[in-house]
Length: 293
Image 1 (cartoon, helix red, strand yellow):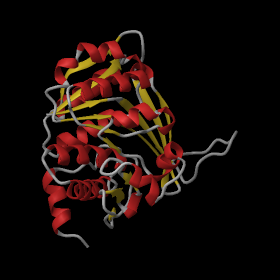
Image 2: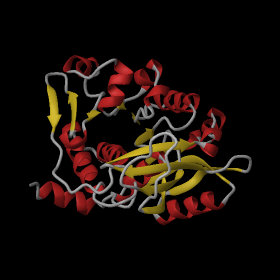
Image 3: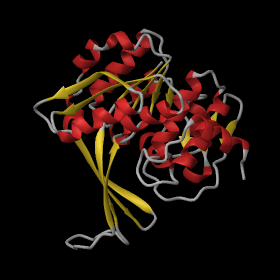
């Protein structure tokens, strides 16, 4: 059983030819809404692959919150531990897709209502988990409480340190795996290099976009290459990687094979618009692994 603790948002996606500069108004090409939030994304990624997933988070008592609850249930995710806050609105993310990349503004809303005391109330689910996945779009003190309880119960935790500004040394030490992208690695550790990877063998796994991912296995730096793909929207790639990595490790994959599996899943996810729309099934990933080009 995989437990994901984290954010759940409604993504408001605008496509445009270019990003507006300060004070500029542009006409966009399209507008769409998609379920999102790094926690929800990673939960869906793991569930699509066949994981038995619990989600711990918080939504508002509003239409977005109701839609997101129904969506998680449709994906086969247990929401028994999802809190409904009648004082805060459901979190939203405004995403601009332009010039082949994305820019995102997140309004946390009810995500910041997920407190350490709520984690204490749902502590029963953590010791039963084969993997816990957590990110940093919720309160840092809540993440720390999750890590403390998992450490106490000897449950492995995958920490996706995004946004990186909230990551602390204590979080890094308590996590079993930490998965920054290259930019986040530079912000957290002051750079990206083989020497930094060697500081956390089999723990620090840095994602490198199309180039794949890298980590140090205690003997050498392992570069696990990415996959050629036709990119439509990169929004959910990192979350797909994390959900897939957590799933693969919980299924008993060796770390290199788990990272390769996660790379394949992430490469599939960017081929459709929306953070969750392109998240693959287990068979999708297996086929990409078998037919590497």
